[in-house]
Length: 395
Image 1 (cartoon, rainbow, N blue to C red):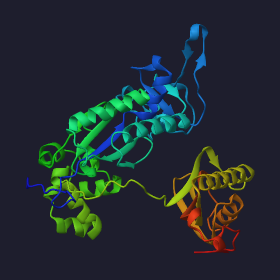
Image 2: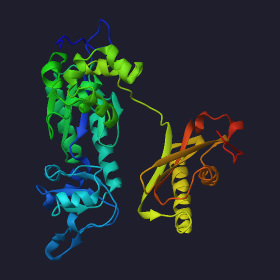
Image 3: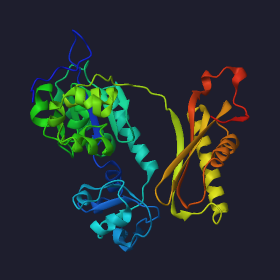
Image 4: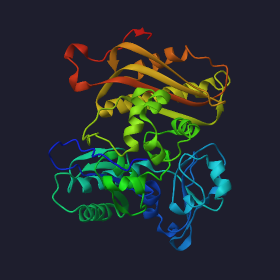
């Protein structure tokens, strides 16, 4: 197994890139603990599909729901580190989580609050380091290459700015590229700072499981395991031609590169969405005929919400799609293209309805979703191409 790691800097002849990945610590749960500080130090789970707000008692004290009392099909949105120590993680079914941590406190998600704190921490970071790639509500990449300040001191200043603006902690990894920065931000959580150099890859990264690389999912991980490749080091030692044969040229070459810590992706400060969608998982499985009225109401509501999202973000789209998940977890999608881009709920509902006609509705449904893609900024449309209700054309 070779220990030679090549530089991934894209600035030939210039300074080596210095990329940070900032990840908020247990973000949703931490925001809730600002509101309910008496729950600090306890296992707390956020999520579910029913309202379980705390109830006020005398002298300002509060009663909280417990996970053991939950009944339903919801999933865990996030959990505190104390709950994670009991095996409760995001995306886990609530009923399964209740078996692992029945005494954990249960709170509903408040996404308005999370978005508020997300804006606060990103604004605080941008005042110090403005070259930021937004990766979601609780994480960002930051290009620090042009900032003349020692890395650990700069990371400490960023963490302090986040804490002062939000009252929350974050973890920061700084490395020569986005791949290593992302991995390093997880190494010393919570409230950590990790500096990773290319020379550290062999002893710090190679012993880790291949799934620690962002982009290696369950299927690829299982396939690598079947090939006898369990760690990143074993992946780095694997023959590149063998990886290409097993995974195809593009993904096989990518696996070979990332195993050696190579990543030339730039920090992208602005990106356009490819699609806008809304979906919902039902509390109970619904039947197309027996629950027709309820399903129709939900379907229309999803179309209205997608239209509202498009209008707020000033986009129109030409591809309308639906997503169905049956009670046996089989998932199907259907898309159709309309003549003129739209952000109108009635047009989206009509097009989505046409998609629905192309799907078998002989089984109960557990999830329904609506999507609009092939997006165009409204400001980029010529006046003659204003959104109109259009005749539907099947793909």
